[in-house]
Every structure is written in structure tokens, then in C-alpha cells.
Amino acid sequence: MKKIDLMYKTSEIIAKYGITESRLKEYLIQQNILVLNEDEISTKNFQTILPLIEKTEDRIEKKLKKAEASYLYNTDKNKVSIYQDDAISFLKKIPTNSVDIIVTDPAYSGMNEKLKLGKGRIIGKYADKGTENGKWFGEFEDTEENYNIFLSECKRILKKSTGHIYIMFDSYSLLSLGNVVRSHFDVKNLITWDKVNIGMGHYFRRRHEYVIFATNQNTRKIKNRKFPDVWRFKRIHSSKYPTQKPVEVFQAMIHASSQEGFTVCDPFLGSASSAIAAIKNNCNFIGCDISDKSIELSSLRISEYLNTGKDNLQTKSMAVDDNIFWE
Image 1 (cartoon, rainbow, N blue to C red):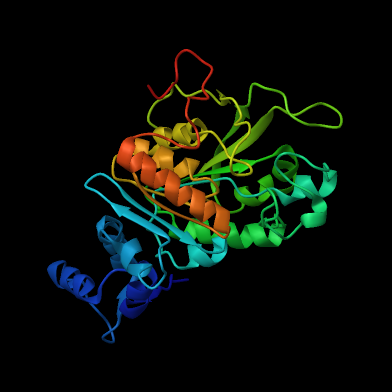
Image 2: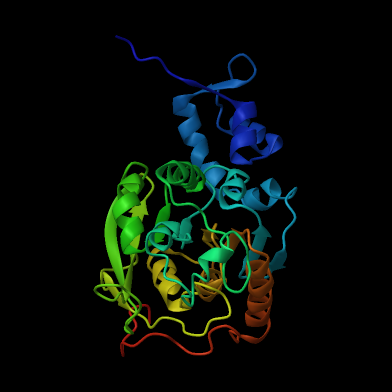
């Protein structure tokens, strides 16, 4: 049976990928690409357009121009913008095939719901659930349905040629949702973050979390083979924002997968540790969070770091090993 060649409408390419009509038309003429019925090109010809799309600058900024940035900073080396939005709503506004790396730490409702650890430093009082009273924050419900939607959007915005994704999990959410990641991405590694200092627990007390590393249908390698799959960085104590992670955790992810000028995305911004790590690696950054407190602290933190080089939420390195593998 003869294989039917699917057709792509140029109008849909413009809307979906965030490329301008004039730029697309110019390229079609330069490459002598046949346009059928005044608005259609073949799958084969579409594949030749993908490199042009990925190299087109400012697609994300133009696509998000209707969304009001809570913080925006542009220099010769970095473009940093953060938005107050729901994670999935935010991802849906980003053009297809436009982000190089996703690094993110979704809120883990599963473990909290099961254990209900009273007045824990991070989770707050369960009587205050759904509010931002004290240190409580609104969680992304980590159901399989939500994760499928979330991961589908992550897959859509990640570039096919370079896309890497890092997602943090606790032990409960890893067991319940790790298999969902495999249905969307090519999972390459499970990384253990050793927090060095022991934490809470009813049985064996926890001192680690996990990171799933996966690629988006590509074979792009990390920078080198010096990276271990156990990372030893101390947890943050007495943090100003709940669940604040060390910058070093995100710096390890980004350094392993980035090139200068790559675009990094974090749809669960939290305290903006991922943004600081992206800046340190000379990458562009876009992120969002639904929390007022997150946006307020993140804006101040990023601004001070860009202007002074000082991190007002993490004043010292959390690394414990003598040789940090990105140095």
C-alpha cells in the first residue's frame, strides 16, 4: 500500500511554531519549496523547515508578548523572564519546538497527602491547605492525568534536535508517576540527589530525592562522561521559600546539557534557583509560578544576582565534594 504523504498548512506552522509569515515565505522561495493549494507543503519539505524554525530568535518572546512578564531582563549574554501563571497554562503559550532544556521541581502533593506530617518546615499545616498562610503553597496535583497533560506540553515545546528534560521526584511520586515520563520521553538516567543531612520520616528517615533525565527523540549527549548519577549537595535550611532547592542541583543539570545561548525553561519556578543556575551557564531563561510569594522573591533574587553577582537566598555553596564535576 502506498504511503500517504501528510500535508502541513503554512498558516498552522506560523501559529504553532511562532515564526513570522514573511520569514517563512522568504525561506520557501529561497529553497524552491512547492506550496500546494496556496497553503500546504509536504511532510518531507516540512522537515527541511524545522532547522530554520529552531534557529529563529525571539520566537518565545513574540509568542508571549500578550502575557505580562512579572520580571524581564535582557543583556548581551542573558534574556531572563518570569511570569505569574499556572504551569500548564504557561506552557501552552510557548511556541512548539522552541526550548532546549527543561529543568523543574513540581510540588509533590502525593507524599504530603499520604503522610500529613503535621507542622513540617516545608509543607505547613494541613488545616491551611489551599492557602499561602505561613509556608503553605498551592500544589500541582500530581495525578497521572495532570502529568500526562504537563508532559505532553513539555514534549511539544522542547526542540527535537536538542531537547533535554530533568524532572525532580520524591520517592512516592517517582513510584506513582515515573512510568508516565517514559510514555512521553526517552528516559536515559535516574539521578539521586543526596542531601547529606538526614530529613524526616516515620520509618527510614529520608535524605535524598530523585531526578529523571530524558531526551526528546534525539541522541544528543551530555557534555562529557565525568558526571556521576549521585549528586551530593546539602539541603537548604531556614529558607525564605518552601522547598527551596540548592542552585547546585540545577547547575548540575544545566551544565551537563547546555551550550551558551540555550533557552532553559522551568514551569515551577519556586525560589528561582533554576534561573540563577541558567544565568551562571550563560543561558536564556523563562519560568513561571502561580504563587505571589514566588514571583516576589524570585524577581528580587534574580535582579540582585544580575546586578551584583550576589545570591540573596543562598549565600554559600551547598556542594560537599572537593571536585565539583562542572568545574
